[in-house]
Image 1 (tube, rainbow, N blue to C red):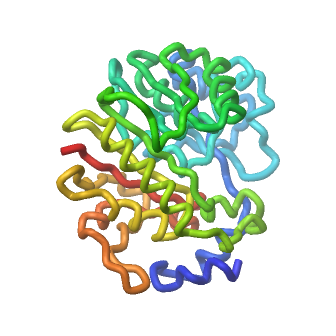
Image 2: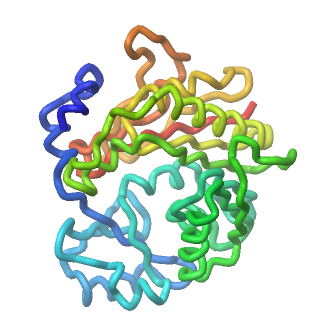
Length: 299
């Protein structure tokens, strides 16, 4: 975990961060509200996992222990009544706020958890276009959507940086490919590798976000997110968007959830001031993985 010490200047408690980044990761299960009510979900959990904890700040969502509980093996999972996900990865969809009858684009949809979350949040009404440049990964998205019985989702197989057409979407999610440092808890810290070329990854991320802004209608919402800590992949990418094209908006968070603001300077480079409106999730603050989320408004 020594590789993560590069973030000492921007994290409040380095040792707590490093310890948490290698600890077992709790999961959450959420009810497919298109098929299952919260009361019925509570009955399921009373049978399958009585120790599950309802999360007051996340609708229809329960946290289950990090070890010894496998919701993916429950019959209710196979029947498409529930889904399991990492808690922190729910926030991009929550921040995007998709609504029934919206036209939504998920520009980098695989593995599909956020695509499904958007369709469920919309009551399976409207349209969600799930795009990914890798066909093999897009098949996984379609499998999740089919299991959950969601009909509002369509699929496209394209390079997101070159997504064609002049369609104006109400909302666009860019859950960008990244170095994945925030996922270290899934492998007890063994997956952390900072040998990646940040500049190469950043070029891809900037291309995706710029195209997302172009595809959003005036006044539309764009959410940019990654599961990494690197400012090169987060604030620096936001800094690549012209302020006259899109504004980075503040994100209201429930008081139970601790987040840090985006940083406006890293290793001598200054970013546009409104990157401070983005939010950073550190694993030791809420017992989650690491994540970065920003919401932009197309001008």
